[in-house]
Image: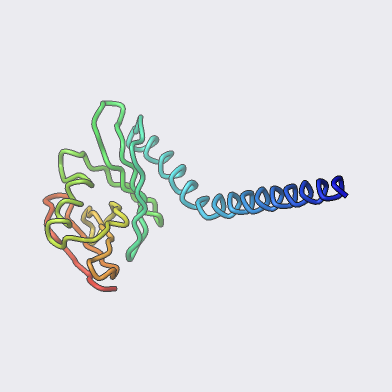
Length: 165
């Protein structure tokens, strides 16, 4: 009888462990598939930035979606200059901006924090709006409503604000 109880307890443990392993593996597979488009976009944008902007190191990657989609690679070129390489998803137009010709993502965050006091900034991305480089900051306001601002890369001015989406 003791032996039967022992085997039942071990069988339960094995079933629980197998279930946990299967669930963890399933979660990993789902996560991998969900992040795959971002990884592919980053890899392709990085290749283009290395080829056309002579990018040597990559610091950050941004994915901007508005009327058009842009991928921005932030890094350093062969000359040691810090640059943003903004690549249009369709057409592949490439724009290169030196860090010292505009504001950084952290400066754009500070501008939005000062203007709107968001509860939480959820995303920041660099892209193009009306043929000008912009920072898009998406955030939750104090009422937990989604909002977004477009901040000019060149001078930090607020170009567009949408509140309570």
